[in-house]
Length: 96
Image 1 (cartoon, rainbow, N blue to C red):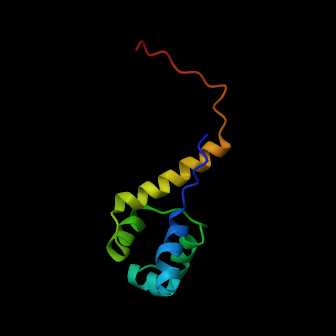
Image 2 (cartoon, rainbow, N blue to C red; image 1 turned 120 degrees about the horizontal axis):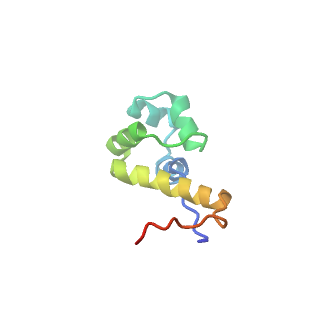
């Protein structure tokens, strides 16, 4: 298994946008037109990034919605690889 540990989108937002630009969750949440608690849950990695939030983040912070969703997907897959054991699974013979 790869040792690469992808960032949760919330941690990425905190490290790349909030800290360097001295932004608060409330300020960004206002631009996103979401509650501070909704944005705070994402930034503190207590919730996952939704397609709706990806669209909002794309408009407010930049990057494509697809890149935001890819970041969430990479993080989710990395977490699953750490917990799901597939050693006893066998490939289904589809005659290929």
